Image 1 (cartoon, rainbow, N blue to C red):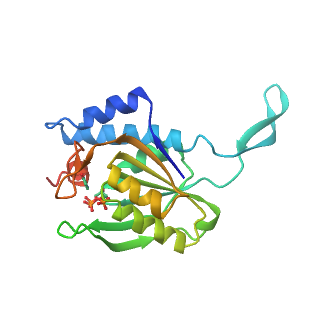
Image 2 (cartoon, rainbow, N blue to C red):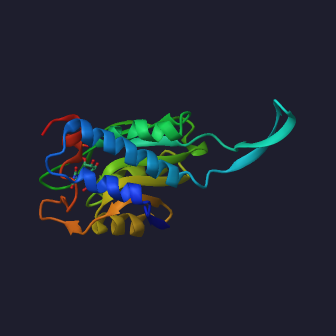
Length: 208
Ligand code: PRP
Ligand code: URA
């Protein structure tokens, strides 16, 4: 298990810009996309390579290429979709496994409403993408679904995470690596991250 809060100054800078109260829909979406791209770079830094013979302009060479299938990206609907383009810009051949989970705002329990996991999930690393890890319930349900579907390696990318959510995932699934834009302070009594971003899905889709 490992928790990787990003140390990149541009990630920190852009997450801070995301927090601005009066941020426009356009700017919020752009920044989510940019930070998702950078976190995907960090989360894929250990992808395995193999040497492949190829003919280059200067003759025959052996060059490094990916050894395995690209990961499957797992956006948790809805807000996770905001990170999809950024992740795909680094992993253009990644498949996409969709998981629909909405947090019940009264109970804070995750409610699953849709799933479409790629058939070859056992051959791919899954990269869960969701802007927010709050109580951790939605991510926990997604990890359990992926494991039940045969997934052997899971990483999860969050723009902002609460310590409560990190602890839940660490305890229940110590094999899952988490790549995080910012580890924030705590949850408020309604389960929102402080200082946080507010409701990320509403800000991405303009449903405020
Ligand atoms: C948000 C967020 C996560 C979840 C985090 O989604 O995008 O999926 O809440 O909360 P948790 O860690 O306490 O489970 P939400 O359920 O609000 O749905 P949305 O993406 O449709 O906005
Ligand atoms: N979901 C969000 O969008 N924001 C939070 O702070 C918590 C859950």
